[in-house]
Length: 210
Image: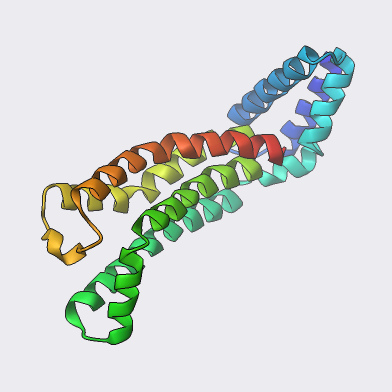
């Protein structure tokens, strides 16, 4: 069974011939193979059957190698980062419109959303699940560095807003009735949970993507 694994890794190496992180990718895939084989053998499968099933799940090594090419990875990361920043830009525009204009549609939208704040927070949490799952599904085990970097850059607006709110840099009345002590505490807690939530989704994405 070792020959099957080595043959797969050899073909993957050829597909990754000029990738700057080729050794890291091969090590990650090798570890994923070993873990997958062990898990399948624990449920009664032979080593040969387990190995063949894991390799089938990984797919064609040449196709897998193409998925790790840097330009596509960079575009995906930028897209996921900008998506979160876009949420904040929309929120800023809505807040400023609410404060500086008397448009009825803005007031109605603000009032409606203020009564759905908990639901909005739940939906927003799904963004972080989406980040981890998408990277795990598309890039497999080697996406670990990518998901960490994406979360770090994407969370910059979250951290800035948290600092601004907690230290009252901007008067809390601007966000009324969105922000109250209980909701702020919940937001801080949920923000802390975004990272482990994304990591869990990343692992699930690997399972269903490879």
